[in-house]
Length: 268
Ligand SMILES: C[S@@+](CC[C@H](N)C(=O)[O-])C[C@H]1O[C@@H](n2cnc3c(N)ncnc32)[C@H](O)[C@@H]1O
Image (tube, helix red, strand yellow):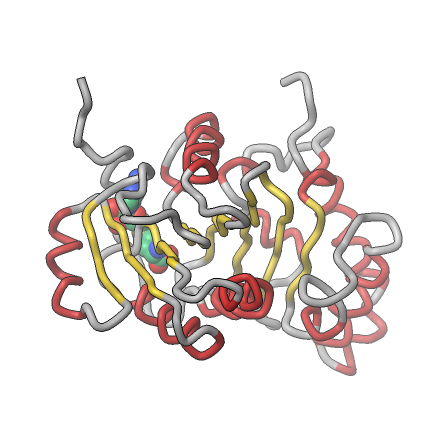
């Protein structure tokens, strides 16, 4: 018997203006060409929360780089869908649903932020699989977590075959050392920040590179971050060229590393 109940559970609806600007900026830079390759790309914002704000911000930012982009905000809480409906406009709609993604055509990009955090680790992997299976050919999922005001963020980039990248992004001045971002790791990694796990070694080495780059601090945290990422890239498969890497990205307080290097250790 088919159930029409959305897949997932209603969770806390915390959100806020500009909270997701760091990942929006990454999405437009990294996936702008993908979106422009389709005439009317469908983008899903899954789990937008108590207000439509972050979905509207994503829509406006995407429209600047891809005028044909259409965005659907999906929420599992009917009250949050009702609250967002008045803000619908040409190319921006809101609808009730869950991880099954009840949309009329496959999305080219799915963004889910601060959603999977409230599920279990095994569920997070299962829902990644479900989301990936719903993508249009060449499509991507961006799934992550951020601090309340968005100054510290981390997200995974996935395509149909699985996770491909991990990105850390922080406002200068909002952290003491790179491993402070560990608390924002995606659900599939957050419990793996323990000795013996690759993501733990990555953050440890990033902290060391940050410490070694301390002499650059008088020139500003930006210069220190760039130097630390360059040092880190000597030992880790950090993306070094645009759109995922290079000084243009690093100067924003960002770094993207190949997922395989930080993926959970096998045999757990
Ligand atoms: C913490 S809010 C995040 C809001 C926004 N994305 C942000 O980052 O500011 C999480 C939202 O995800 C919704 N949610 C949880 N599971 C969901 C699912 N399976 N499908 C759609 N929405 C879901 C919750 O109801 C909640 O409103």
